[in-house]
Amino acid sequence: MYLYEAISCRHTVRRYLEKKVPEELRRQILRFFDSTERLDDHLAAEAVISDREEKKGRGKRGFRRRDSGAPQLLTVYSAAGSLAEKNAGYILEQVALYLVCKGIGSRILGGEAGAGRARNGKRAVASMEFGYPDEPLFRESPLAKRLPLRKLCFPSEEPEEAMRTILRAARLAPSALNCQPWRFEPSGMKLRVFEKITLAGKLAGRKYREVSFGCMLANISLAADELWLHENIVFAGAASGKGGNTPNLVMTITFTP
Image (cartoon, rainbow, N blue to C red; front, side, top):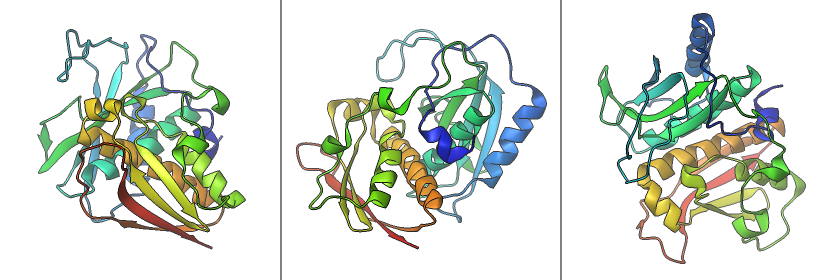
C-alpha cells in the first residue's frame, strides 16, 4: 500500500493498545516527516515525538476529554507565516497516511496539544496522536462519515473523470469535529475551493479549520500525482470568517499535465 491508496481506507483511530511504537520506527517517522512535500518550502517546520500524557477534565472549548490511550504524540513546530496551520495539516495528513501503511493508527488533533509551546524559534501549531490501534485501522470509503459530493460541490458542469478522482480524495480528508468546511466549484481542470463555516466549524476554531484545509490539500496533491497532474494553488485574500450561508473563496487550484 502507498499513500494515495491509503486515502480511501484510512480510519481515524480513537482507541489504542498499551504498546509503544519502537524507537527505530519513531526515527523512521521523523525521517519521513522531513521528506514530506510542503505547501510552502520556505516555511520551516520540525516535528517532535513524545510520550502522550493522559488528559482528564475538559478541553479549552469546554468539551469533555475522552482519553484515547494513544501512547505517542507528534507535535509540529512551525515558523510564523500565513500558511503555518495549513502547511502543518498538509504535512500531518501525509504522515497519517504513511502510518497506515505501517499498521499504525492516528488522530490529528490540531493545535490543542502543545498549544503555546515554542522550540528553536518556532511555535507549536498542530499535533497528532498515534499508536497501535485497539479498533479497526481501515474502513471502506463508502462508510466514511462525509457529505456526498453532490452537497460539497456546486458545479456549473459535470466534472471530468480526472476532476472527480481529485474530488473524491478531497472529500475523504479528516477535519476538525468532522466539520468538512470545504465546498468546491470545479470547472474543467480548475477547482475553486470555498470555506463554509458551519456550527461545528465555529466550535473547532479558525486555526483547526486551517489545519483541516491542509489535510484536504494533501489528499488533492496525492490524487493529482496519481493522475500525473501538476497543481498550482493560488490562495485568496483573507476571508471575513463570519460564517453564514455564503461560502468564502479560499483558493483556486489549476491542474495541468
